[in-house]
Image (cartoon, rainbow, N blue to C red):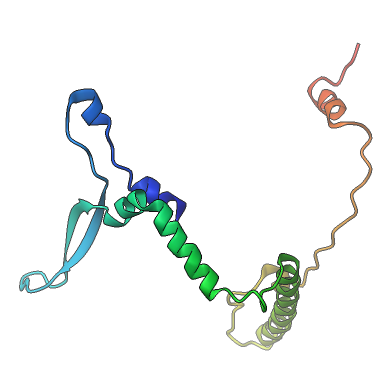
Length: 159
């Protein structure tokens, strides 16, 4: 459940307590298409109505969470589910393969442009277009603590 849905549906009791006013129920703006308007086909109407979904979530939050959790448990396939590490490894493999394919595509596009074809690089990674390779350099050992570095930057002279 969207964690803000129940917060969005909270009833405002402030006016009741402060000024003996009325409860303020949460509202939301809705848009509706108006038909049968001969002078303006496709007319749109707007209305401010009580936010029923938010109010329902506010009033029945524990029950709603229990029902949603039960639905998740019923649909979950734990036997075939991947661990976080396995998902990350597979995602990395897919991204690596996608970059390889985009590099091949970009090299063909560059070749076509050299031959005078009117062709552009579509939605392709800039890394593939430029034939770059990202190399992660090992971290070098620090000369001192970050406090000492901050001192060197802020006040280079020490008496």
